[in-house]
Image (cartoon, rainbow, N blue to C red; front, top):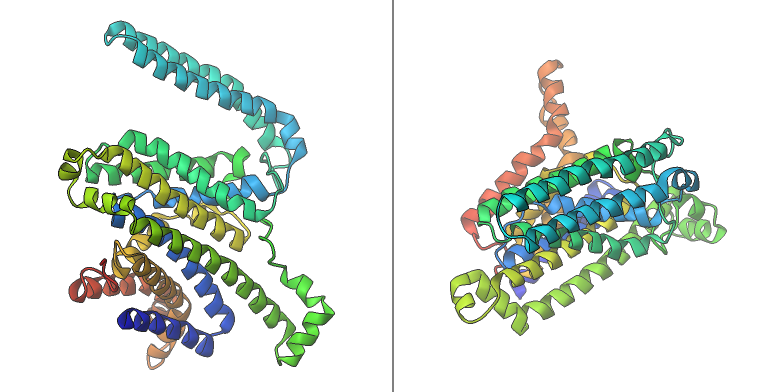
Amino acid sequence: MKRNLSLFAAVGVLFLLTGQFQSWNLALQILNIGVISAIMALGVNMQWGYAGLFSTGIMGSVALGGLAVVIVSSKPVPEAWAAGGPRLLLGIGFGVAVLVAAIFAHRKMKPGRARGWTLAAILIGGFFAYRAIFDPAADAIEAFNPATAGNIGGLGLPSLLAWPVGGLFAGIAAWAIGKAVLGLRSDYLAIATLGIAEIVLAVMKNEDWLARGVKNIIDLPRPWPVPYEVDLQKSAEFLKLSSDWGLDATQASTIFVKLLYLLIFTLVLLAVIFLSERALNSPWGRMMRAIRDNEVAASAMGKDVTARHLQIFVIGSVVVGIAGAMLTSMEGQLTPNSYTPLRFTFLIWVMVIVGGSGNNWGAVLGGLLLGWLWLIVENAGPVAMGYITMPMPDGLLKDHLITAAPHLRLVTLGLVLLLVLRFSPKGLIPEK
């Protein structure tokens, strides 16, 4: 316990030093992203640390969480809905009906040529009929004011409601993926989940009617009770309070907003940790670890391994989806191009490995530590490189070193991973 507390205290010192030598705004921004990353790491730890599922589709769950914020809380676009909304829903419903009909035919008909031809007729004919219904509706929606809208719009509900919806979206997608690929070998599972995550991202980028594609959605509402800095700067009480503390009103407002975000995110993190610890130390958690350690023995004892894998795969994806919705709410915009496997899949995996897979507190430590490292090197790297290259004459080499300094975070990340795997292969806080 003393060692674990010392590790968390050391990470806390890193954030304090960032605030002291950089800025408190930067320190709080990194801390907020670190807390969200810790929640993502907890979701991945459930899949890998509890059950041994090697999924590389984390980016897809994060993106679906962000999409939920757009659908739930962005401003409605009544004109776009009137132009093609009902027909769009009809097309989606028809597409689902075609898939259900194909599944029904596959199950009810005997294997043979007749079943093959029937399935081909249902899928091919259904595809063209679906496009005939869906495409005109999507074109009508995208044609309405494409400079500022061009999408179907959202429901205009509070942003906090989008967080559980983001978990629901990610959970539904995980259930569909799990039903298809959880019977595969671990390496095939990794490849399949990575490919499906890329498909999710490709849909978000190319279907403008959904969330404007690569044109991005901006001005998403903030979650209650986080105010806007401009509103705080107009408040006489806040101006008096910031003056009493000797702070500039602009700086005080941004710090206050980030502190509110930190409070909300920390409450969510504590709730996820509490539930995760209760689940891990319950008979269900012991069963999951038994399946992870020896699937054959667990199956011989009557455990449905595939069903339990699907269960934990969905639960972990739900947690990641909630974190993805939280991140989009904080940023106030959805930018599909920002979702990359390096940031939202492999970095989260490194957090779990460095912190200690199978240990919830280790996942939190890894999320905070690697979240700090990932962002501080990007911000402080050019400054440090400027001092290092100060004796060098001005020229292309010096400019290149300073410009490329943010990419040192990749080298730093790899170095930290190697050191941890060498001296603490089970992570900084190993599983008990």
